[in-house]
Image 1 (cartoon, one colour):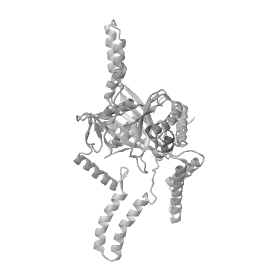
Image 2: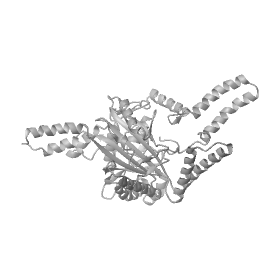
Image 3: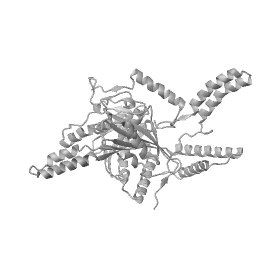
Length: 501
């Protein structure tokens, strides 16, 4: 049985019509060229030369892409970035570290996380309360769960094919629900400091054990533990406010009404997630969500939290006010520093021609150095039937128009044109047959202590992706990239077309 190859994943969501330009870019170039032509037609060649220099420069800024963004957008982002650095807007310190009085149940988080609220929902079955994720900017409500999963690295091709089918069925089921439409999968490698093992050994050590056995056991702990890592797996599901409003009103309204509407979906997701190989599913309450955020910012905090759990000295758990970092200086253009660690984040671009396999993102999580952390996040949004049909019809119409135009002008059709036309037709047939259309974005990151050379570790991550995917470094937006790649809150897929963040 051959493994399924996913093709066409690298197609841009908003592709250009005219020589790779979007209609807005093409119209802008026409408007910038009009003054030059008017000056030439009037015989004012000196004015035409000056206008050509000015308008040509603006046209280059609008048209020429630089690492995934037009030069004009780069210029705007650079101005905002420098303004934030100069004014100190992008520099952050927690209220507790500054000595201010804080509300334990109020999260104190930097950057784009300030728009996210984390209210507690009512009781969910017999598992306790679930911490809701409320994105106030986009009007979305969601919840996160921690999974235990053995991974796919050791599975056969047949097993991977079954998991791929089950993932497709899960996404298809989301497309048929009215409450949620997004699902995010996040995997984090965690440097294993052996904290839980030390607590267990202290509790189970034999007092009269031979000294040689103790010495051998300690040496094995040092050798194996220094290179050991563990994986944390999270899943986040969310839905828009307009879809939740009616069922939430029927359930009593407010936060509890939205929570109850989400709970009905969460209850039905556990079996599909277990079919994907998840052994346990734990929906995060307030303290566990705070721990997931805190260890995202500070991997070293996991040891103290783990010891507190093992010794049962953690009380009710970590307060939400302690979920964020203690301090975060103004982000550098190419990295993000937080609580003594530095992270470099990337957008992972899928191959356009060769396609990819289920599980091929695994090498991005291969830790190369003890103490290094890597993360991988895949954000899915399932379009409803109406939006999917509109998208595939527009894509087929665009490819058909371009092919007919080239034929009328005498240009030969390239292999890429034929591939796009065939892919658009295949996609339309699939949607017509009842399948869903999925928007997705993939983000990856590497985190090391701030005293290390982060560029060396970023280069190793790029080497692991070489030949499989293309990594686009999220320059001038590393703090937002960190949120998309590291934190299990479901942020990372744009509301509008065209990019990751």
